[in-house]
View 1: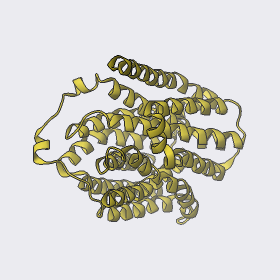
View 2: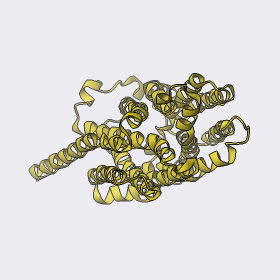
View 3: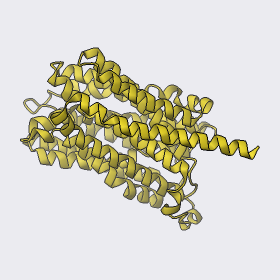
View 4: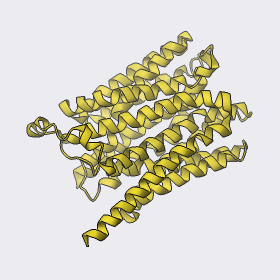
Amino acid sequence: MEHMKRNVTLLVICQAFANTNNTILIAIGALIGYSLADNKLLATLPVATVMIGTMLGTMPAANLMRAIGRKRGYLVGLLIGMTGAAICSYAIYAQNFWMFCVGTGIYGVNNSFVQTYRFAAADVSSSQFKATAISLVMLGGVVAAFLGPQSVKLTQDLFAPNLYLGSYISVIGLALVAGLLMMFVRIPTLTAAEKKQPGRPLSEIVKEPTFFVAVIGAMVGYGVMSLIMTSTPLSMVAHEHGSGAAFDVITAHVVGMFGPSFITGAVIKRYGVLNVMLVGAVLLAGCVAISMTGHELHQYFIGLIILGVGWNFLFIGGTTLLTEVGTGSERFKIQGVNDLLVFGTVALASLASGSIFHFMGWESLNLVAIPFLSISFLATLWLMLKRRKEARLAV
């Protein structure tokens, strides 16, 4: 039990540094893109390329960690992330938009590894502690909620007139610290026998209702969150709130994303993962409703906090549900496909966000989320009713 808590604690800290870097990229990525791009429609492309890099790296990351273990894989990922941040730093200095997009894309590959910290927490935990461990690792984002935007404020002018250059150099430093801490994490590797077992084919796995609902929930939760969050700084600046206020709203949003992780695991254990996922979808719809009411500062704050909490319930719920599918070496394949689909959706949402906002406005951007939230809600409700029927027949 002591080793389990130690490993989860270290993963929480590493996740905190990783989320801090992601918060920095999200908070200023669109603003840097807007300042560097000749075509302002491409302002959110740097944020989208982070997600594209994450999407493209999911299966290679899963296969690499299956072969050499999660810990070594995470160290490789951190080296890739530091390389991407270095390219971004030089691109800001050189005022090169496309090089900046390449750097954010390379950094995104590191996220392919980072996003599986939650699965590593499940690997080192007992079945009773699994949901709590996943939730606690996501709790690392609470630190990022404050450290990320505040780091931007402290470092954005360090290398003036190259605005935000210091912020991307700080990303390199935080990744280095995370790498040093990762050296002390102990994560079990697959045995030789497990590596020889290929497991079921994906064509069979994807037919499982549990897999389908888990993936849909995570895709919709992360996709809707990214769609709205990516354009929030652009909308706020356009309505004369200023970049400082936008950073504060992003801080509140990230607190909403990760703050509930103090209790999400316990809530899942008490009320069931499917109930938590349903509440997550409803909360995301609530964000849309608030965003439709106007552009006052308090509306951005309340809407983005609710957006974060909805993401927390739907994404952590989907992750917990996914751990019910597959064992042994099979889980790497399942997790890789899950993250490929999730971050493919996030990449599309981030990329589309800027164009939808530019051509259709903030209100229409929010309305785009409704059909997808409806699909996730109905799919989760269907699985819940299916399980209840099966339980009654089994009695």
